[in-house]
Every structure is written in C-alpha cells, then in structure tokens.
Image (cartoon, rainbow, N blue to C red; front, side):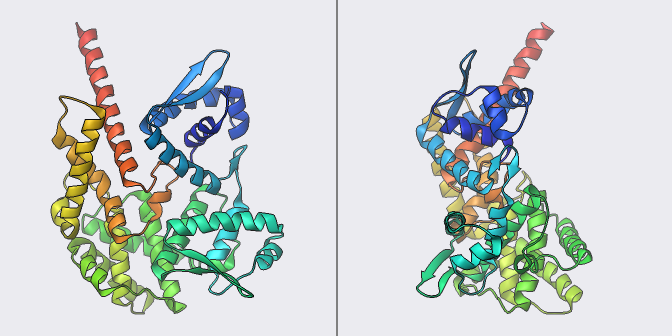
Length: 398
C-alpha cells in the first residue's frame, strides 16, 4: 500500500474528519507532505467511487458516491493494510518473516513452534496465521489443521510457488532487505551472478522476440525461474491437467519464448526441465504481457478470444449505461479495455493470481468489474483533463 492509498484507507474508516496533523502522525509524514498528497488521494477516491471532502476547521473526510464499487475497493485495501502494517512509516517485518517461514514448510507445523522460533505470544502467532490463511485463500491454497499434527499448507505446487514469489516481491520492494528465513530464501538466493545471468537470459529472449513485460513483473519472472529450478531440485514439481496443457500450448508466441528461455536455462544449469515447467512459465508470460496498441490480442490470445471479447463487450455496455456519457468513441474504450483486462481475464480463466494482484503501486482488487471501472474512470478523467487543457489553450490564444 502506498501513502495515498493508506491515507484514503484511514479516512474511509474514520468515524470523524481528520486534520492534516492527525494524518501526518498516523503515516509518519509532515503536514506539508500530507497536504501535497491530497490531490492524489482525491483522484484515487474518485476512481473507486468516492469523493474527498475538506472544510477549514473541520478536516478531511471521504464521501461515498458509488457504494458498491467503493466497498469492494475498501475491502481490498483492508487486506493490503494488513500486509503492509504501516504505522508511523514503519512496516512490520515480523509478519512477512513468519509468513515466509510458514509457506516454506513442507510438513505440519504447530503454533508453539512458531511462537518459540520468533519469540512471540500465542495470540500474535494466531493473528499472523489468520492473515496467512487469508493470503493463501487468495492464491487458491488452504491451511488445514490435523489433531496432534498441527497446520499444513495444502495446494498445488504452482500455486505455492506463486505465493512464495508474491511474498518475496513484497519483501524485496517494501522492507529492509534482510533474508533471515533460510528455509524460504534458499529457493531464491544462492549466487548473485546466477541472479544476474538468469535475468539477462530472460530480458534478452523477451527483446529478441519483441515481447513486452512491465519492470516489476520482469523482476518477478526472473526470480520465478530461479525458484522453479531450486524447487525442482528439491523434487517439488508441477503437474498440469492435460486439458490445461493443451490450451496453454495454443498461445504460440508465449509458448515459443518459454521454450527458448528454458533452452538457455538447460545450457546454463546443465540440467533438463520437463514440459510442465515450460507450460507454467508460458502461463506467467501470458498474464504478464504489457499489451500495447500494436499487439494483435485476437491472434495472440486466440484460445480465449471469444471469452475475452464477450466479457469486455458486456461490461462496456453496462458501463456506458451506468455513467450515461454521450458522444464518446466506444471503439477507443473497447480497445482500452481489451488491453487492460486481457491479463486479469486470463488469470480468471486459469483460476490463479500472479504478483501484479498485490502490486503496492496500484489498487487492483482481483475483481474484474471493479478493475474495469477503475481503468475506464482513469481514461475518462484523462480525457476530461485533456479537453480542459485544449479549452484553456484556445481561450488563451483568443
């Protein structure tokens, strides 16, 4: 959660208006910084169905315009707030360290073991485990309990890896980088040169094939490649259903790139990887693509095109009726939605979440409708700002 999101979350949950000084104490920033942030907080509030209000001598508060959209966004911010425990500008690293420890456990573990290892009370341990359970649920994993044995993470290997890479990315970007949980970091950190080499293999292959991926996901993908190698060497392998495998192979561009990446990795590591690993990475490439105007989505995402087109068309119809905007180019909105929603629709189709769902810099809720509303609201806000600038230029010219 970034600072603007945190401020919005605090205001939305406050029973009374708050002054800049109150917010400054809560987030660990000066009054001047808080006032500077308020323009961004207002834009963020508008994007998720709210409106930032202020009155001299009273303070700031949030007025809800669209309760359905706002409540969904606020719920997801509440989940993020628990992950980014940010009081007075400090993030609670212990929660991350404990969750990293838990996800790395292959067998059952007991709460007492967690208490003794991290020197925490049983109440704190139960609180962390409750948050951990929510985190696992978002990634299609479960935390089961067995009498006399304790707790254990249950789910497929691919989902466990996505949980691990998510925890690694959040920790790497947002917390002082101190890899103290050896059972977790042994899958990521072994040799600095290896990290550099694997990242270069990925970047060079992507460039050579004109396949664009955002920077934060490039980092996640390169670390995933090291993670999958180390999990393989620990005999923790992915097994895909044949039907899913056949669908993944139909994404020809991503599948070809994945095979090239693994060919380089096989030469680099002097070991082989099975088709399930190639297909798993293909799936990550599909949902990580930064879709620009020159990408032929209908061809590149051919196996899911009817599914994508139907969702976008239906949503655009609902949206235009909801906002009641005339004289707007529907084709522009349609193409914008295709580019914005294709990756999350693909995740929805294959029923998994990747790292972008937890990106600290963007309020992405995992709920497709809200994600689409946010995308279109951003576009329409930019459209209105552009019209305003054009009007001012014409007015000043005259």
